[in-house]
Image 1 (tube, helix red, strand yellow):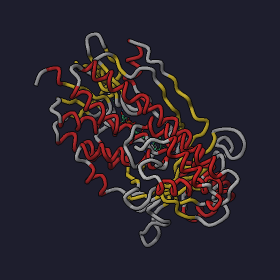
Image 2 (tube, rainbow, N blue to C red):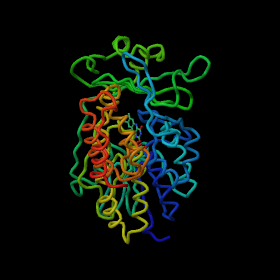
Image 3 (spheres, rainbow, N blue to C red):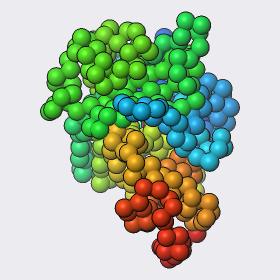
Image 4 (cartoon, rainbow, N blue to C red):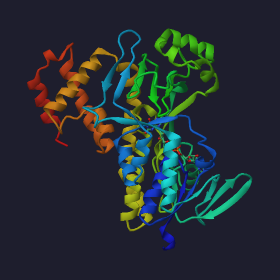
Length: 448
Ligand code: FAD
């Protein structure tokens, strides 16, 4: 193997571990440096969100790495949103047409371990407890901290998969400005837990992503394979009640849940303790003008384009990055060309899903129990039947297909206009003028 088929990956999280496999499978010599200890030895030590929604984009990438079987063994199927209005009956809104169109809840730590095992089995060298500290891009030397020691390692090219707070990104910016901009969301989150029932079973419907929409705030719950649910409360940091500024401790949380989420109280016996013990997480969207430094360095996943979690696509998008980057590296005559082509392909798509993720927060917290939204959703499904391959619901384009996110965004905007126009002033599909709607679909949407 020639020296220039060496790649050094910073970060052995989700994207780093998957990319290591995809490159090692193609015959590259891969070193992965991860700041944490080996989770297979020390237990998984990190990350706030305990479980993640895996959709087709991520699953496709896992198939490329031969990791899908092992990952799905530990996953819980989610057929749709199970919406719990404050007043009225809770119920399931399916995401797709049937069980071939579902998403999966997976444990972040278990997923990371599966990916590290596979990377290692393909020959990638994993270096734990190595925190990237600084990079000399002239002599191509990466400096790591390992406990108290300083370690210097030469590299040929660096892939930054070191997450939203990327050190590699900061080091690259010292050589060439990347045009970095972070937009913080004025809402944060807190995690809580629904334990198993006394008989060991799930306490609520397991095969769904539960949502308690409450206007400008909400709770969601995703199932775990050990029959618990991770509940996440999203609400503003500051401002009118409720916000984290006003709801600061377990007692205040108990009062909020009593008022706004009363059906969850018997499900979360440790609400006070969880609320006091767990930190308030912050959420942001990260935009960069440039993701790479000629052939020396490139960024992927959250390091390049962190996003808010409301479409459940951050990891899915990071996994799509891995497949795209591995293909460009394999095809292009040089790494500089591969990194440039990767950035040109993926940046518009990352920006599209960042935008859709922000928009989806409003949909989840404010619209899923609203009559206009539900009517539009009914029409969306009807138009999917009438125009297969042409009118495809927004959620399906993002979660069950692999068309570029930017194309999904463009088509979703048109479809939304058609839906709003066709249902204006109606309270059922009976009054829909099908001739007009069909004509709009045929005129405005090319078949996919
Ligand atoms: P990370 O997973 O953050 O991995 C980065 C790795 O780099 C870590 O292992 C870290 O220890 C290591 N590292 C950091 N700095 C250094 C350093 N200096 N030196 C060496 N190593 C370093 N996405 C979904 O697809 N579905 C979801 O349902 C979903 N839910 C989410 C819920 C919440 C509350 C949040 C916050 C995010 C959610 N996401 C979801 C997004 C998802 O978590 C991220 O997009 C994904 O983890 C990105 O993977 P990554 O490998 O780029 O970064």
